Length: 84
Image (tube, rainbow, N blue to C red; front, side, top):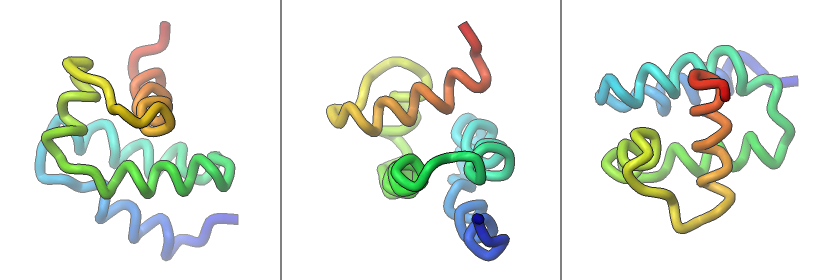
């Protein structure tokens, strides 16, 4: 079970100050993070350590992460808002 303290910590790390990232990451943290398995939780936390400009390019689909696992998490977040 995910503790509320952990969710609150991730909520603040998900707020990037860039609206395009905030509208993707903050709801994902609040609504989806609790349902992720342990591997994907760690992956999401690792994604939050990336530079905003890199993430912006990945989420706007102008570039892809060189790390396939990070790119998988980006896709998971995008698929939530852009189901195919």
